[in-house]
Image (cartoon, rainbow, N blue to C red; front, top):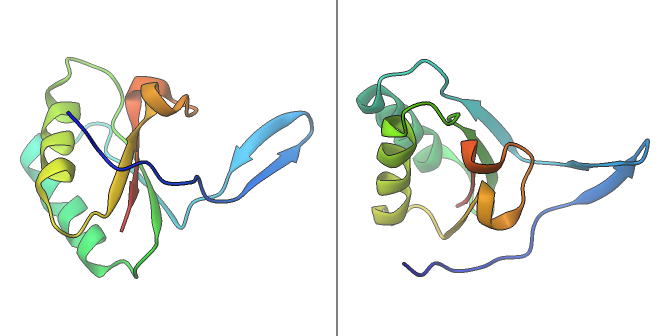
Length: 100
């Protein structure tokens, strides 16, 4: 699987730890996959270009994670993305950083 790499948004160091700034943070813990995908589609579609959206899905059984990743990979409204475990983001395998 290949995906575009983009520079991460703004970094600033606060109290010795890095804090990432996102245009939007969405937490899908506890959502059914179908509902999460529909909501993420609406969020991505309505976000202005060059927005950074942190999608939190957690680890769990992996069903929600896979549904959201499948949507992100296949939609034309996402210009690039980074999986948390590959980009070493806080939240690791339980997050995806989506760029519109």
